[in-house]
Length: 116
Image 1 (cartoon, helix red, strand yellow):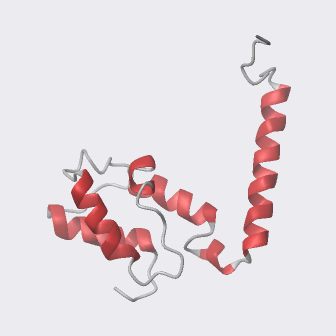
Image 2 (cartoon, one colour):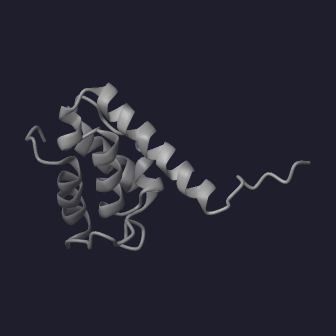
């Protein structure tokens, strides 16, 4: 597969070929009938030739097409974010983390530390 379609679309097509049907964007890969061995094989197929392939562990950490797409687009590994320089994507990620920390602090969250 050397076309420039989004890698998640390529994965969706590969899953369709494997299980014989289209799965829903939020359908868990395992609930759809896939197993660990199949996911590893599909990962190899869809990431072959990518300049920056994502780690196979993402298929387990983000076990549906929607979660995987959101993660990959946000990480700048594929899609529009891949066109930005890495420093820009990293800077955005740092701003997002800082904003999340501010929201947690303003809500009274102290990090869960009890001082012991």
